[in-house]
Image 1 (cartoon, rainbow, N blue to C red):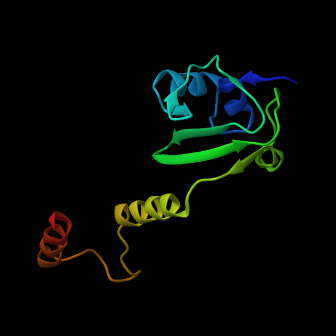
Image 2: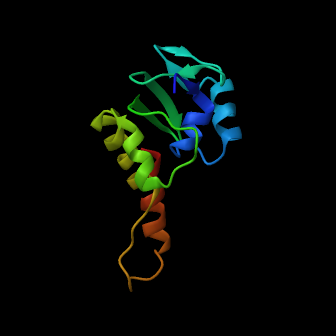
Length: 124
């Protein structure tokens, strides 16, 4: 296999749920190769480095093997090498932790004073 369309490849390795979403990401400039946004018809070859933004995460992948068919997740990860820097994953985890609030079970709802203190902390 010489090459495959980038939208089809990203769909096949399960980076996007549908091929339409992969094509829309290409149109929106969320998929880049060599620092330039690519069209969905761009051909991918083995060894290419693809930068894509999926759900707020800036992922970097290297193409190891090409496939035209959608694979199950356990096989899909064998078709690419994830080069995403660990700092990016730490940033995503930090954002995820900041969005959720944790309150110990059984402590009940916050009092009016506690809620005001919480609001004050969130503003900072």
